[in-house]
Length: 313
Image (cartoon, rainbow, N blue to C red):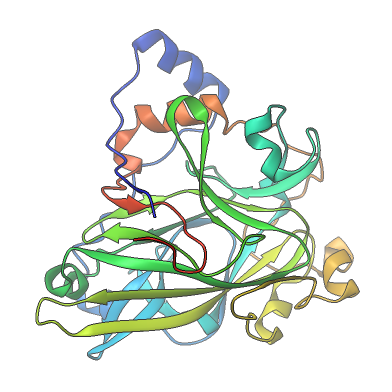
């Protein structure tokens, strides 16, 4: 497996930054994760659909047990939630056109439609990241957390990638390739990437996070992330079965009704779009430079490239 380090990007020259700021949404700085109140440290209860604002996926010690959860920053105080209690709603506001260029061919044909939760924050669109900043995790884990993609179900393809140097995409997870795949998250890190879905419907993304604490104890937990993509009632995703491990099974979790979705007046979720037009894909070279300009947004201090089937480490 190839190891690599992504550094903090340096600010852009003033003229270029001005041009980018007028052409694309500005990425907000990520919320502080280390100063969690006692209320934020409690696991939330009840089901919730989140379709706008900031959330993170990450490990925490819940009453002493290593658990992968979702930190919901759309509420005050921020609340950790069990993955089974959350549907992540990818509304039509996230619909964009696939750009030209061979480097983006993994998203489909140029001009085609893809639903993208972008690396830089965009108003009205969910902004999911991942972190290893829960205080007990940051204090106890030795060096880094291993994050694996272990299963994918959905009506289309799922890819998680970063905007690399000069806008070239750096793929972390690709649900079409052999599983598991993995990357590393250095302790105390907070990261954002581009979550891409090629078809509307319900996606079940099974992930595993593991680490060794400084006392030599190994910890591991596997959970399923539920995404509802496009113009359907996101509440349906709560009833979907768990993701199939080790393989990509397009359409397995979402029948024809899930793929087509109900009439738009049946959709009930925060952040639902009212315009069906396809948005321009602003997150290519320009968005990568914009993210560089607001360097506080990305803190991927250490990572491992994706590997299939437990390749060389």
